[in-house]
Length: 372
Picture 1 (tube, helix red, strand yellow):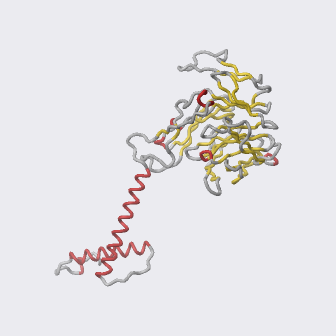
Picture 2 (cartoon, rainbow, N blue to C red):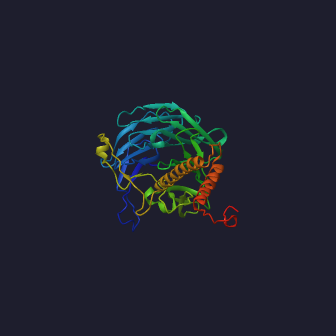
Picture 3 (cartoon, rainbow, N blue to C red):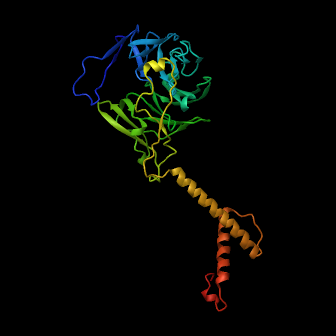
């Protein structure tokens, strides 16, 4: 509210007393701030949006704003860094989505009137599909809550979903590893989930998550904190209405948990530390991301097991075909158009009959035959 950003440093061993004074105070906005976001990979690079209709990108080491974006004619609802860390996407009260490449220009590289209607009361924007899409959460007429999906290269609308009527804005969190978006609202209990797909219809509804009691805010933990052995794809904390902090766990129901579920646990970006200094990022140094394999030692990949099973099934089919051909020739049978169950039954009978014929001695009588 005082138009400043205050930077607080938390000791390595945690807090043992209250902090009364910030380490750094950043000044430069002409009106109160609406949101701030650290750069995903560069150390001490911070972006801030204000009611003065500007976005500033700060070098905290130098304690100054290095870039200012002034092209918004109205209040900036939301902004977000791209997965590559080189672009910013914004959604404004004028109903426009704008994409900036701030190291190249202070002018938007893409701009389009799309998404929530003009003069909507709030909206949020999130990059999805590894930077190829933009998800916007907002309102239609009559407090209709909606989510929109746009192509980030053209800002063409791909699809939208009408969710329900409520005055509370749905706040998105996107898990890029499994392409799942979590939507929650202040004062509500239900967390709505969608899988965002590459092709139509783009939105796949997932089972909603309903913890006990309502929440005021949520924060998701890094993927490395998840228990992959129990197929836990997400872990978060929520602040409840009665000022408690509670853990939440999001799991996928799986049968073969003794195997590593590599289809829902791809290699994830290593976020244990920064990749660049602030000076390097503002100088345009490219970021090379590192990835972490989440497979625990000693666990076999589920995909490897499925490959083995499929290979065994193929071998069995080839053996059956050979047996069919052999027995059909020996017994004078001709090929018939049979369904799979009939074919399997006849093949088994032919194999047993052939085996019985070879082993039957001259003194066998009908009473001892397994075909009686």
